[in-house]
Length: 254
Image (tube, helix red, strand yellow):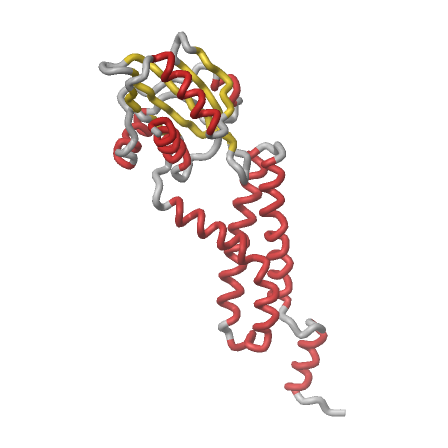
């Protein structure tokens, strides 16, 4: 029996893909589901103690791959040869959308903040850490004062200043401790004689730890309080350390 070239082509296509869907779409769908599982799993594993040097790249790569998949499937859906598979494209692409949007959101937020993770209220004389370095570990960001970070902060965070209070040094130190605890900071070093207090804050989603040093010392009128907050991991803190200092200052002044 004679078979036309068109019928032979259709039959061959069905043999290559018996479900009638493009192999590209199916494979991208599998990868999309992998991203959908890997991204929240990496967050959970970091939260329960996995080394961020493993968990964070898995999270980032999962989000990036999801974004690439979303872009590819969106582009494919406009091609004529895939017009009959648009329902499959949507079904296979949906799992990639949440992690892709998460990455886009983080990127957009990051555009508004400088690439630093060390913020202080006193750029001329930043408070120094005492006990934090031993707790941060070898892989953590160093707590050394970096002139380039100070210069960037002066340009972008002009509204952070030393806290001035009429309280005596002892009363101001105790109040600073009370404020830190009310903000759920973990105070791990408190030395009223030196006027130094160190605490840590653990973020909700990833469990990232930032260290804060609070310095309380006599001022020209009353007592001066300076803070410095430094992230243990990451290059940019997306404004988290500055926000933490502002919240402390607002709570203290209340």
